[in-house]
Length: 331
Ligand SMILES: [Zn+2]
Image (cartoon, rainbow, N blue to C red):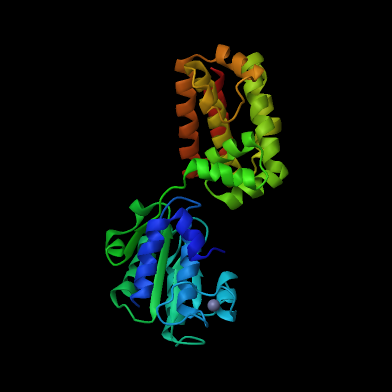
């Protein structure tokens, strides 16, 4: 949960624009908040909803109290007139939007004010988008739509043009790293995490759990095996790597770690040792790996890892993705 004054530190321009419209009593009937993961989309959506329902907010004030019954229920996603829509599986389906619209034909449970917040709005199917469009074409003073997306290119232009589009800036990596260190991560882990995510909450959670430390160790072992006994690598990925990377999230994060490790080997070749994030500069394995992989091979491997990431997104069977990648790394 964030306040405007906290939001202003990370998103000064977006906060200013929205606060101005609140001050003038001209909150838009539809917002499209676009920005990478961790840039504050959900936090801003929560504050806007609170502004509309806070019991203690007067006149042209912009900061909701965050403590009244309404603010608290909004924070915990329990307010009856603030609806959340998220992808059901890979997409947001027409039926989900229809259900919402049906609820909206009744008057508000506690007032006539209603807010709907659509997470990952880029996953709306075409049919679902057209349903939403009907909503946006008949704006009601008392209905506010807030759409959140990391990928604004996939939003229908007809929807975009009916929303106030707010761009959220990527977080400053140095600031983010400092925040991680304030939260107890050591400098090396903080660098690695800031290369993997810009979501503070995710980074702290990953650091607490065992999955991440184990994944990091397995990637070190993978490089070691590829550098010393490449014929053993198939057994290794089947016995260790694939079983540890259980679901889609694990697999994506695992590929990101492998990518960072190979980028480091390339940086070592190029003498960019201050850019290392996976290894530290005097890591013995890093020297060994640099001798094993030429710069040309590293470029091929980096491309192969990026292509593996795309295949996962296209739902190619993960075991197959890791097997093909291993073949390319081993060559
Ligand atoms: Zn309040």
